[in-house]
Length: 524
Image (tube, rainbow, N blue to C red):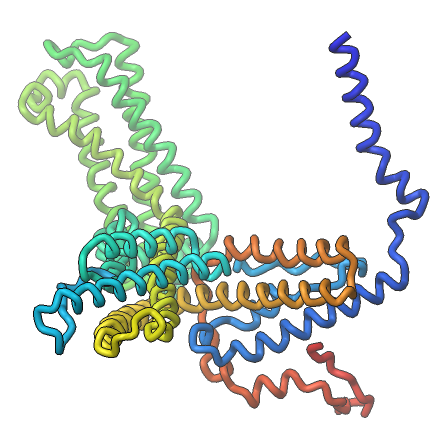
């Protein structure tokens, strides 16, 4: 009976869930009336007007001056949900440390003065924590950044007469980890970060066919495929040699073992011939200056030299007469023979060549994420300090205590601003990305407030307000996946008011060809 009842309930839910929408559409209960469309259109115009005013106003705001406003406009634009779009929506561009105790001057060795200073310090730190949380709620401070700021504030709060200092954030503003080390110690040192360009054509006409082969897109993939096969063969030969070698008498091989040795030997001969041909084609197809400037060519020559030495020792090993006459394999040179076998695996380094661009992009991405977090921490500290400094007279009434606290905070703010300026100078795109994200979130927050005003005025129903609110909140959620680096725009047109105003004009213009007036679309 229990399973029977559960089956009936399940079928009822499935039938209701799959047929309710069609039934409502058949009865025309989901049809939007003309009045609802007009109300929605009015609300969208009001929200869009708020967006336009805010984007124009925030362009001169000091915390958002370098934001990419084209991205802000594309992210914050809200369309009428009752209008059916005929094309796909546009893609969103993914978008305190411790001071020594200082008694108040004028009240030497006064316990009361120290207590007043400490109380003011605690009040300032609590206000800073409130502003950190407020920035996080507004979406202009990431979760990792607010955790670092709150942890540092709590640490300073537990120490007597200590304030939040900016040098505690230096470790978050510096690039650290394995990827930066790999970039500085290996990739940059050996010049592997430079993108390869097409070599200059040779001066001799008879070398043009080799130049044509070298510059083809299929030349490097063929070489990588051969290297991959050779590495697999080298591993198989090492495994076979490990299980088949006889330490007492290297020359006593069975017939099957001799056959396998010959197969491996002639396979190595084939690969060595291919490497020789490839190196010759590269040398003839490029200028000598271009050839010697590439580390990959040096690696090819080194591997080719190892392959030639390996072939010589391999030939001695498979020849019975030479094996009996030569004492190389019975002497200490046998270790060098095994070493050359392992050295053949160095050919696998060539497989890193096609992976290098992806590795460099990975390193850049990780670096930008670290710098983005550090820049966000410093910017949150500076913004909270600027806001709290204004309320110091309300936290403490003593003028001298106010002066001590204010000067200390201003000193830390100036130090942090210098660090942020260094980051912005070295990674300008990170500052643009962060300010763009903050500008987008600030504009979207204001649009939410405008939507609430529309709801309070009774212009929209609750369902329509939720629909618009869902659209804006979806844009807010997408901001968390915005890029950590945006290429800065041309400074000649970034804040050129005359250039921007010319684009925003909605005046009629006459076509040069037919003299027909055209109306340029304007912002709401």
